[in-house]
Length: 436
Image (tube, rainbow, N blue to C red; front, top):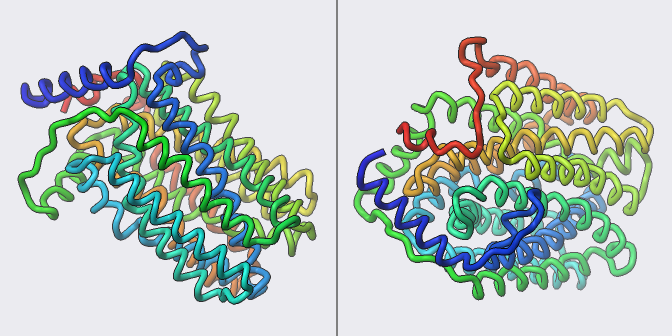
């Protein structure tokens, strides 16, 4: 690390300490919530994410009602996330050079507007699957600029020693919303129809926008020199020249392309394989979210413990295997258990990767590095969804999802470190960044 970088880091950490204010004691598992700005941001995102999951379950069910086609489920999944693959990297450069709080207010407002449009069209029963695809594209575009800024804001709200816990708590609230959102979404669909879910999601964005307005965001120095392409290149060089960063990003890409698309097809498994209705679908999604929440809580509790690349790969393999077993299950309760295992192992993998990448990265590169991670984690699932949707024309849906997961399992084995490279990684070790 250069003297200039060290000075910038010291100034940023001093600003964070001033911004977070006086902390109070909380249990180890929730210690980042001591800081009022992070606590407000965390709560606002929690409510907003519940609304997002309510919309997701309604959207999947509506697509099936309109088309009765797993292919269209894949298309909508592709449309909602493909913009992330195209624009998240640009969003990462922007996040390193603007006030990310203002950026987040703009993107959250755009997603709220789209949710209200979907609610109006669904309420009047004039929505078509093509309009759902277009609105999913609009949401995906907003998310592609939102995610890198979101990732870059969190380290500005807590001191570095509590960053691992803050990341784990963010993962916990996201996955708590995966439990509550689908459950509430299933109940809301039964009571009010899908339009009610879309409307409630639109209202939920007000919570995070209010939080963003109220938090005290520290000023920070930004580097304005250089062209967009050069800055993008710097991010890729930073990641793929790092001996530990590169395998973590590659594993994220494998899981996102070949395994995570299974989530898009859960409505199909609920209705066509397990023969359950909206409430059963909500329970299946809630079980996946429950497993993910317990994993996030585990990561938060162990945020100071050492974790190796072998640990991350093994968690990925457990995730892939749980999906394969789920595709062959014909028991509702067994399927619930397997989805819980899949959710747990997936979050143990991705939350650990997120934490390690945040600690390996210098502050002035954080937006770009996390945009590469976001492009892999959120941008590749739509391609996987589209591939899976196309393959369902040739093979049964369970065989397609199982086959892709088996390929992911085999691919991840190549990322296991050799015995002399299996040094432990610690999420609280700043030497990763200092060694650059």
